[in-house]
Amino acid sequence: MRGSDRPDHVRRALLKAVPAALVSSLLPGRLGAATGTLGIAYTSFVVRLRQGARPGSGSPALPATAFVDLCKSFGADGGQMDVAQLESKDPAALAALKRRLEETGQFLELSVEGKYLEDAERYAELASVARALGVTRLRVALLRGRRYEDFKTAEDWESFAGHWRKTLPRAKGFVEKHGLAVGIENHKDFRTNELIELLSSVGSPLVGACVDFGNNVAFLEDPLETAEKLAPFAITTHLKDMAVRPYEKGFELSEVPLGTGFLPLEKIVAVLRKSRPEIPLCLEMMTRDPLKVPYLDDAYWTTFGGRDEARIERFRAHALSKAWTSPLPRVTHLPPADMLAAEDDNVKKCLAYSRQKLA
Image (cartoon, rainbow, N blue to C red):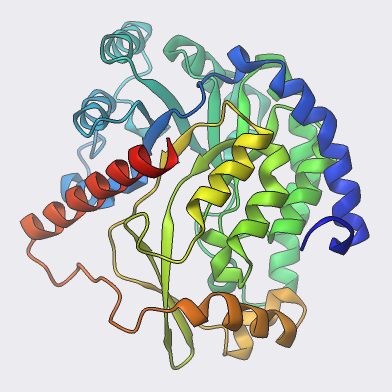
């Protein structure tokens, strides 16, 4: 969908986003990273995180300094780290971590839950941590799960969506006060047009999107269209490639090494960089078993206003026509050491592809 083909409400939202794009393009230092910067999101190490978890210990599975060193060992320019990976928020501990970032020449983004946008005091504490670390961008997930799994009725979904339609505009004041850019991920919660409307209702260059390249495939949306629509709002990214394979209730969906899936990665990156030349690419290569997207089941459509045959047909033509004929990768049957080796191999392949094709 391009230009005049967009619905009126989407065109209005995009027009409202233009000032934000112009303002942020004039503030590259405020937003941070330089063109082509390549980082690794902590979720690329999901196997390590699970294997390193020590229930009841009070210690993070992959502590911040270890995460920074791990990203450096893979040749990345930085990383996107969960704030929970900080072992301490003591000023001395934060200063030591910042020194480590400077020694290794890496940037850092923080990943947080939506609760930080619900409370000005909590956000101020987070902003203080970010300043101490030299962090200028946040990745925020408003929903931990998936819309078509977590919400059983349209009313349940509307309660969640309505909460954020009220809450996010109220956060504008304290977000801008602290000058910390917020990238809200398209996290299998709001459809692309819905997220655009939500971000436009805030009207701030510091409240935008973490553009995940593949999540909206689970909504039968086209990845390039998602990138085109969200590009004016882009703060950061989740770089990934996706593969699909039909099963009896819909399709299986997997992150796969870059260049082996069906996403038009070079086109997506070009679209984002046209709007945001300074945008960092943060790899999210989650080594796990495929997710099931049961779009042939009526329950899947409960929060979407009913079954959409036109969307189904477009998806079949553009995505399922490129489905894998062989089984998608699975790792949970492997011994722990082999699972970790598979994860490392996937990350290495993705970084090599990024350097060769997306630099």
